[in-house]
Length: 253
Image 1 (cartoon, rainbow, N blue to C red):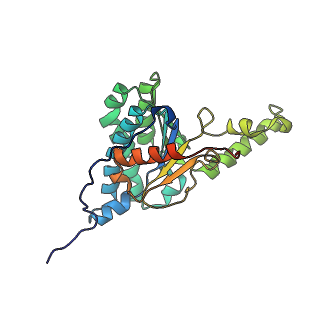
Image 2 (cartoon, rainbow, N blue to C red):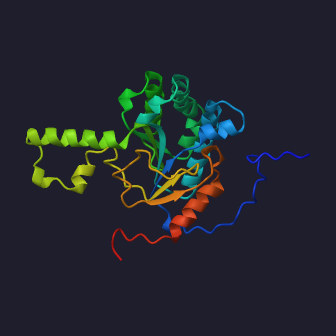
Image 3 (cartoon, rainbow, N blue to C red):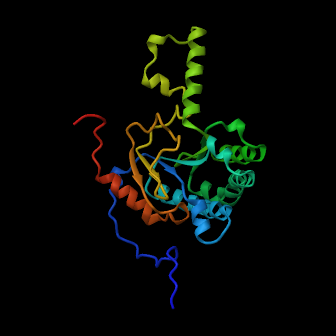
């Protein structure tokens, strides 16, 4: 009797997808979902999925560099993720140090600059030190901006922006009449970034999970059942190809 394991599928041959290099999204945002399920399907602890997912980040960065994408924002750790078991949270927040220790030389070779959005000060000291070191080492690079959303929550981001705007109005630094969408955007974590052109979410879930709620107003969404540790270059290319088939009207005709 043969036993079939659905997660050990025969790898498909790479498809030759023709991508238009002149029609690439400038900013791609990814919700990297499915690490825990990937591990559980294999009878492994959830943290094994997070470790495997770290390797995929490196490969995804290489693909983004290859296609001359300007900004890659990765939803790495949300303000809601603190609710997970402490052991899992501790493991996840040690991964940036391991990732950067291993791959920083390669990121430097590829002219990648590292930045973060989110409540950076709320992170553990070892996470902040590792990430800040990588920021400092890559600050003069002018290639792909690799933007980690760390301790990030979009609702909190918007609330903090409103508080700061209210404070500036009270201190006569800002008039309420001057407030518009552009000015409001300047109070967000992403004040110096282009809004995402393409959002990718892995693992079959189709929700935003408190990610870039303001910034994604006119972003193209692409969802895949592929779990993050299985997110290969050909899957990324599928997303880019689908993006290039869409007509972006921004509310017009």
